[in-house]
Image (cartoon, rainbow, N blue to C red):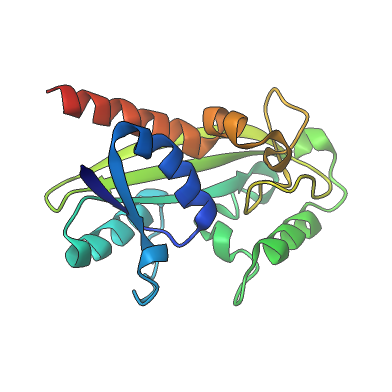
Length: 198
């Protein structure tokens, strides 16, 4: 069985990645299985840099291919913020709740047409020799209040284009198909399928 290590402690991300890779015959490990591993500082200024920093740091320890993603929300009214700082948007001790509250506060009383945004995701696959990148984006708008109990991060506020519900309301199946991470994963899966037939 092929093995891959996922560079995250986020159970939502692990669940989404598992749903794509386990059916392909991959055995999945993640930082959830290695709670003693020190936190990796994301010092990059781009999603690509941060993904590779995490992938390389973990590969040096686990010695199996590592998948690391960096993703974030780019809000046009905020000149692309929070971007690479999405998970730390509200500062020290940031949580999903605090980040969402800060986002709503900064958007103030802007109207829906001004609240355009996109989720971007970069997945780095590092095998100790080289890195490959897979990108996905999802355009949408930021809602006015938290809606839905599924998902994580900014999912309760983000309404993807073509829908009237937030990611947190739409559920896993639709999210896997249209989300930024879902699209990046679809590109990754196509690459892995091609590799396995060569």
